[in-house]
Amino acid sequence: MKMKKSFSLAILALTVFSPPSPAALAGPVSPPLKETRAFQRYGEGPHSDLAKLLCLIDRFRGTDVQVIYQGHPYDASTAIEFARGYLARNYKKERPDRWIKANVTLRGFDGKMPEFKFSDGKTRPVVDVLLEELNLLYQTEGKKDP
Image 1: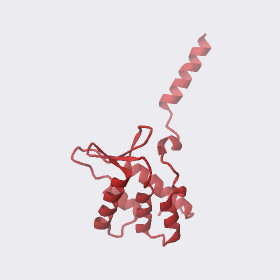
Image 2: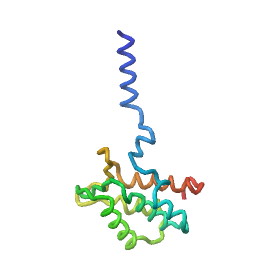
Image 3: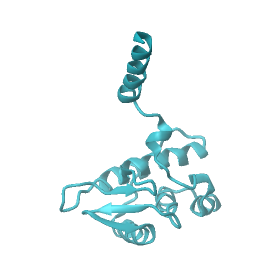
Image 4: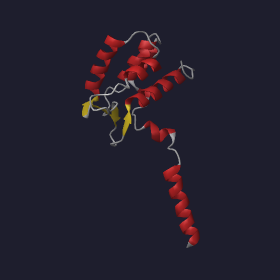
């Protein structure tokens, strides 16, 4: 009995105190980046910094991901159109990671950063997901980062 209790406590400690795996952190972003039409289009053209940002935005087209901004949920199509317009008005040839950190971390009137809400109900900051997807994009090019 004592061994069973110790084992149960050890499992509980591992699940509560161990960091989540990268896959768990990534959330259910589906389909994977490489399987999206946005990635296919990216592969057909120049791999400019602007093309990378457009790929990251468009990769969510046709998904059931929502963007929560200022407490309101927006479907992927609406969020994509807004993001493309914002990018067109505010992009000044920055590196993608710097542009994401400077622009996607802007907080709404509610003081919260934009979040993705996935079909399983989990939420993650948009900035984190986009930076992870950017790293995946760099990996496809054989680069670790810019």
